[in-house]
Figure 1 (cartoon, protein in one colour):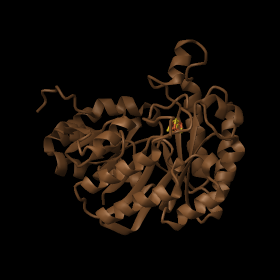
Figure 2 (figure 1 turned 180 degrees about the horizontal axis):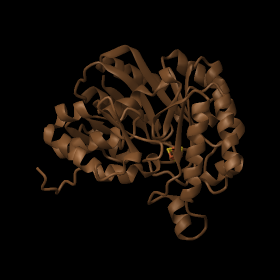
Figure 3 (figure 1 turned 45 degrees about the horizontal axis):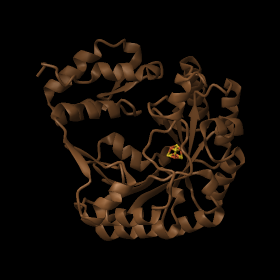
Figure 4 (figure 1 turned 60 degrees about the vertical axis):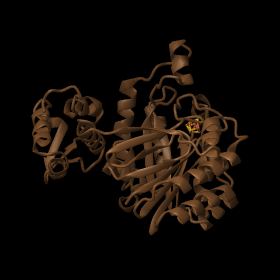
Length: 377
Ligand code: SF4
């Protein structure tokens, strides 16, 4: 079933590694919410929706009232499944007991807390605005507020952390009532403060060897704690996979609302303007504010392979053939022969990446994708 994503592009401060679209000036937050509501009114109706996701930015900067208004608008416009998963991303410093309890009451049933680390020195380095204690309290408050479905985000590959420190952080997170963990390797994106600092030799670049070691420890600790490694960066207690993100990886259509939000229909992808002010103005003037790309069959094949290789289940060969034709399946197999067999496994007509192959995922994926200028077809 399709999902809905709402982008809340406001943050208290920009983290050094972040290249998501967000602004630190929250003055227009209320006006922005109204504009998003207008966008939902004008959206094409979807089939039944089974996930709603407030992402950011920092959605926990919104008042409960604003979140409720957005939910009303969605329920009014779309047929929402009774088992809907409604997630909010929250930063620990906003996770006060009363706020969370009210969010729970208005129907939010999943919370994803941006912890990143429990170590204050690391948090400061990353430009986060919370402390390790705030992170612990956030999870505790969420649990007490009635959230059963709690996810935590961590970042690894930070030079300030020893392997032992990372093990300790993982032990801490697994001792908390979390059912889902998203753990990302720190990456240096252009137009971030981290990129600038590294270029100016003010901080160290990412040590790939360290990141790899930490990834291995992460996988081991997650397994030990009963967490299933179901996507490259995501782990969960089996029945607590993120439904919303699983929709992305399964190629299910979704609608995105808000500045910079993306939408996907299966054969088109569109993205809204990444500018709060312009976004609000276009909504007030009833003007379109997005660009659209028609996906060619090759684009669609690439997208499917790229996303599915990230998942535990991998590429479904039957689906590949049904969806994209026998020639594409043949191409996939031909390309697979160029990769060492230790990096992938074929089981029940599905091709997935082995633990040994995971660190080389980008390289493997590239080999299996269609070069758009290929004259194969
Ligand atoms: S990482 Fe999150 S909190 Fe930090 S700037 Fe990016 S969106 Fe905002």
